[in-house]
Structures are given as structure tokens and as C-alpha cells.
Image (cartoon, rainbow, N blue to C red; front, side, top):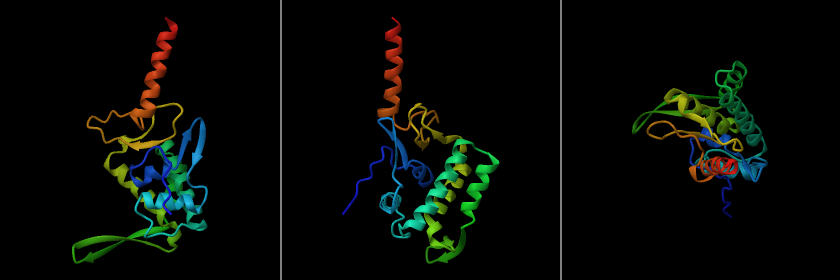
Length: 180
């Protein structure tokens, strides 16, 4: 049985996609990661389902990683947030490999249940290396989603122009016409 991913924003890098397992719908916070079934949906969405098991322990560790990443996304450079992300990263490492295709890297974990959360934390480091100023939170007051701004000029403000962007424009229009 295939379960449809209910989240409004998909396709972000794995670290931000983990943050986006929480979203607002009709003013109520939703959370995909309330049980291993929701974790399975997230693992499938990120191509991690063949590598990791969606069980209670993996869910608990993935939630720890999500909370650490959220703290860092909300407060970049905060020493406590940095320590929390470093703690997640401490549960895995990269092993250099040589394959038929050439040099490679393979993640290793003492406890594979840390794999999904570690993978998301490692991805966040890659985003910080690439373009830290393009890691964004949606500018709409009622939205809690995050995205990596891939626009040419780096001025994207909304998780989605069709939802949050249009809501903001409609609110501004209403405010202007109400005052007249």
C-alpha cells in the first residue's frame, strides 16, 4: 500500500525536507513524524527507505536530529544549536572508498538508527558550505516551512508563490482596499 506524502512542500534538500515534516494547515500544526509510518513516508520521499528501517528507535533519533537542525536554522551560529547538531553528527562518519567508478565516500554508523538524522545533518553542512545565505524560512507569518533558495538572483521569500506568496499579496491588497 502506497501512502501519499501529505506535506505541502516537497523536493527540498534532505535536511530542509526533514524540517518540513512539520507544517501548518488551517492554522493547526501538522507533523508527519508522529509514528514509524510517517517516518516511512519521509524516508521514501528522500530515497532513504532502502538504507534505513522505520522503527521507533530510528524515529526517536530522527526527531532529535530534526529538533537540532531547527534550532540551528532558527538561530544560525547559536552555540547550543551547534552543539546539538554536532552531537547528531557524532553518530556517524564518512569512510573513503575506492570503487570501480573511482574514489567515493560511504557513510558508516555504529547504530544505523541514527542514519536518517545523521544524513540530514550532514546535508545541512553541505548547504552551509554551498550558500548559507540561501537557507530560508518562508516569509509568511503563518508558515513554518523552510527552503533552499535556488532562484537566479537569490530573492525568493515564500515556500510557494501559489500558496504563501498569494496569501501575502491578498492580505496586502485587502489592507489597502479596506483603508480606502
